[in-house]
Length: 150
Image (tube, rainbow, N blue to C red; front, side, top):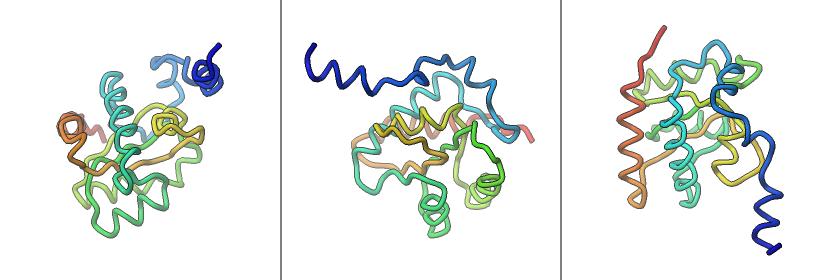
């Protein structure tokens, strides 16, 4: 086996093999609006591209809170399987106040692995950049079109 193949197999986790339909069973109560399977894939691809550019992807609860407070704009993506909910239950309200589009994806592990790290991520803020502007605009329009059921 080549080194690349061994490395790829070692970084593949059991969590990546769980289907979308199974992951949505573990969502918490506030995980609305939930991204569809296709939108989730697009958002993961966008996270992967944004992670390559410095300062265009904000990761983690504290970092995202700080950047939203300072006025940064973009798409906010929450993990839907966070427990306890209290650590991030205030952020959707903050996003609505600041007119930031947001949505939930089923898994915090997948959100972290989309960035290419083994650590999970609770929330990310994706800012627009020229190299992935088309994908960003497409995801932005789909996130804004999601129904907000309250």
